[in-house]
Length: 448
Length: 150
Image 1 (cartoon, helix red, strand yellow):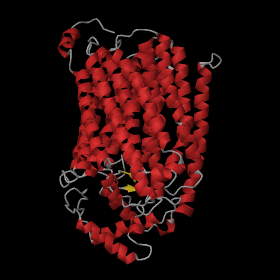
Image 2 (tube, chains in turn orange, cyan):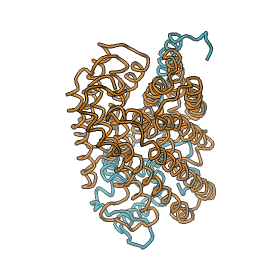
Image 3 (cartoon, chains in turn yellow, blue):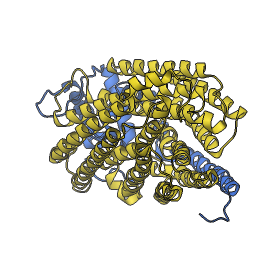
Image 4 (cartoon, one colour):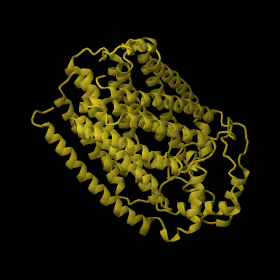
């Protein structure tokens, strides 16, 4: 850590990890309701559980991205943040709003479009938080060195905010509603979030492998180019069955198939950089997470996405457990693992401690990743059986769910494994060496 | 990577290509917008009741259990064609009464069965919601879902 203002990232990482625990714990609760459907059915029905599970995920990922940005921006721009105080104020507004929102959900205060359930006032608050964040970061970028990493990252973050504005547009016509709803959802996770992911990954590669910045940044532009050239028109794979014209079946099939390419490029990129760099960085856990995010994103977003993206296949699999399988591994691989990679790299520097609690962190990596993969396999099997019985044979939905109930038990088991892994990860990031860190913090000399 | 591709060339391709694909996307979405209003969604039958019904659907967060046109949670049946499943095409009155009866009977409390909450809909709210589900079932969805099971 070379700049004092980087320390504001600590707030964001702590907030993100707190919500990560909430998200996964509530996920396990949801998985339990699948196998014991009478559990809590009056007190906390499944729709509320799921709302908390998905919203907590999105918010903690965004909070992690913001922390990552506040951490890396001073190093990239070679200048202190424009206003660390504003960054801390922004954190507390964001974090408290998130907690209030979750509490509101429990009390049935919410709107009703998937992932955009936040009440209007909270949505306005999100925009204000985003503006505080973008103002602070853009001012920092303007006065400092403009690297490709910083430029691509800021471009991604700006468009996250711009596309969020479509959350305010809710036409009465359901088909129109859905078409623009995807401008938030798809253009985030299969569009501009990939810019953020690639930029953070490029930063980690520069720091961890020592490969020349010119080489890394050229790769970065190629990867984000491939992401948007395929991902923008790839939105078409959500426009097959919602009342939009038939030509989307062609456009969506072709371009969303090509969406696999940028994810594959990220795998090649990380492995090639580490091989080419040949530097033995002491933070092996950060390297593991960086490789892991590229590989699992390729599997979860790339391979599992392709599995059901062709229109003739999607006609049968759309909205079954196949979709759930893809959603879980894609989010975990691309964005959860990326955030943990960044935190694993940055937290020892921020807390000025040696990276000695590696074993625990890496156990967390393997347990969580194995759990998520197993969950994806069980949901995929469930989805394939469901597709056949319901979409080919025409069997009634609830009867089909009974047929696949065994898979939901397996899914619950893998969910418990994930929860254990996540507790290990959070513990390994937050706790060991904190006494040591307090002593080290008394010293003036910065530890890099 | 080839030495011939410089960083600034890669950057220019990224920005230029992105603008190109974004322009195509926006044009196609504008065309789709017009298509939805004029052709696929019976916009002339989008009454106030249907819009009110959509807001009841949203207010109770039905989408976090059910799917509609295949989107939502996967915990409860598809409702984009529930009107058809209840026989609304041939017997609209029967389907309406059937759906109302279903709403009123929740939660069933049957052990081992997924539970739908009781949302205490008024007579008008139930009618609005059913109008919305009926309207939704009439959107041209390229013949999706493949079976009435949804």
